[in-house]
Image (cartoon, rainbow, N blue to C red; front, side, top):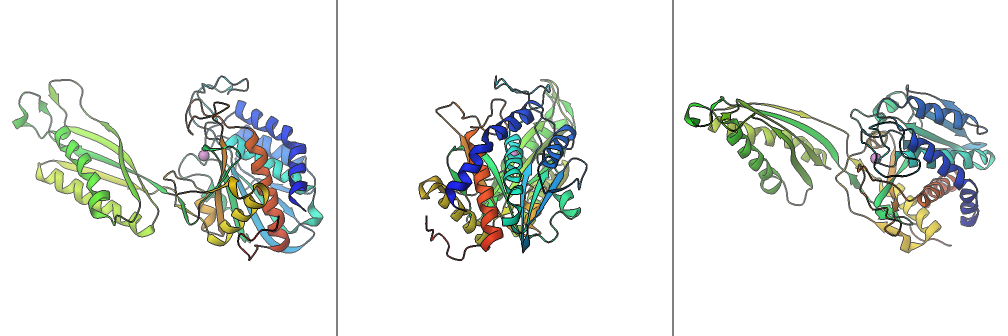
Length: 403
Ligand code: NI
């Protein structure tokens, strides 16, 4: 199998894949409610030859392609859920579901993996081992679908796992690779400052929860800048704050919440204690009380160097060195990390932005869309990776490509 064969096969079904993506885009469903979406995926997969299709969780679908010979098992994952956003793209295939939109490109991920399954299912005899296609529900909402699927055994026997995210900040035509730490652990915290309410003109008779809360917000910033090793990455953001009702009443309490993003296990474990120390110290100093809750979210996505090199090679083989961008880590979260607990793997970006076509909006924006040319690239990446993985395994000569 050579590069031009793979590109021709992807070209042949490109229009069908775009059709699937548009169908999914028009009929988005939010996390844990992907009933019609998973039904559509199931039926589409069932129409291909030679796949064992099952539903390991209510709204998920897994297809196994077991090759003609013994070999390794590669899992490829796509997510399928949409977001609670009112679409404003004006596209002819805009969402028909009020207040729900595919604003992160998961419609594209599903279409890419369906196309990949279609191509590979026609090549069963050329495949050694197994290619496992995982269509996961609920990536956008913690606790996420990935953990549930892992518990249901979808990673049993898997040697490596790969996945991609269509990425509008990266131009279509490019593949983005990150070695090692790629996406952060997104944890959530809740703080309530309990003061003593009273008259706005008589502050001495109150414990002003707003004044204390403001100091808490400011001092939480000192954790990243003063307590953590400057060479480690971390974010602490207070993203919501509420308290008070009118101009002449000091409220009894203030509530806030926010996000913490980290990569390293040790840093992640250290932060809740440091936060509580700040909150406790400041509230005590002013005679206030507090409630503090810290919730761990998804684990960080950390790519394995060997598989990342393999994906890097695959991209260079398909598109040349210029099309591949080695990127910095990113502070968004992804439950792809759940699969990485079970097998080595690599998550990569497929460029989906296109400034000439006006495709520049960020993910989770009401005008977000993707350059549909990126769907073909995603398929080519997966097909090519699957064929080399199941054929010769991971190439040992990293980046020494004969093309
Ligand atoms: Ni996403």
